[in-house]
Length: 443
Ligand SMILES: [Zn+2]
Image (cartoon, rainbow, N blue to C red):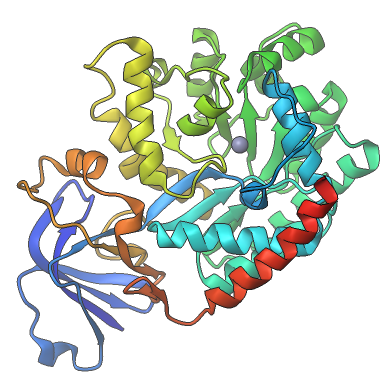
């Protein structure tokens, strides 16, 4: 049992969005009370007390598209890489690297990515994994790291034809086995989707096989869509239709499915996303870094598609991605008057609905009976913060590194920026050792 007192509470609950000075009571894994003022400590004699010292108390943040496996690319040189387009980036960096990943690499990539996510206030990550060096057992290796740290995560493996039939079959088996594990566990901490790399690395026959396998477990998919124009060209060649339409024809879309990017999509495709209630996840920094274009977010919003925010392995600081989303859209459209409040709401409202669909839990709000996924953020606003300008302070004031304390499912994981139980120095030490061996294989 836990009592957090003396904080400014951003609840993200429309009925009561902001409390200037209040407290939150947590029992077991859930929020039991949210109130204004100072608590009577006698009432909470058995509770552990955290004094927020006037900092912000708000719901833990959510990242709806990440790639933990890319962690060890940080600082690594890829000597022969000359990347003139996105296909080269995939072939010369990501596929080259993931073909060398062993289970130990996958496990420690997950460790460091989840640690960074937590340090940036992210309490739930939806990950999209690839490690063609060791397919089977890779999601279990990630799960070990996740479970040790206590973060929530949805995991999947990017099924693809790119490494031949046996590995493709392995990727189906890995997805199915892990989906069954997550379903049986029903913990609310781990969830699973059926991962597909992208339309361009899956034949018609393979898409059919993936759907057949998924229909037995009914998980929904997690798939890159129309990230680069080459994905559209490939889809037209294979099927005579564009990416979203092709996926629709194979019953890949649906309310549990997360389509990522959707940059090179047209109005008809947006209608299909809406008709099927498919989620779209946006990751602007990755899109800019890969020079693939700018997603048509305004059209997604007009159509009423549920658009969430992710980071695509580029960073674990989702607040950084929020800032870039706004800049990129306005820059691209040469229009200062767009994306408000839809863009902040991608993070503050839409991501929690995506998690509800995936995990079947209520999180992302400080409200009675919601999961106690809460962060305390060391942000002292120098202008008025109130119920009407939460989006403005989130966009221009908050940053992930201000996260001071992190609670997931009622458990305090980070307090005053220190992990309470896990020895992260030991994990970082081991990660450097593991990544050195990986880098040696890439030279
Ligand atoms: Zn991605």
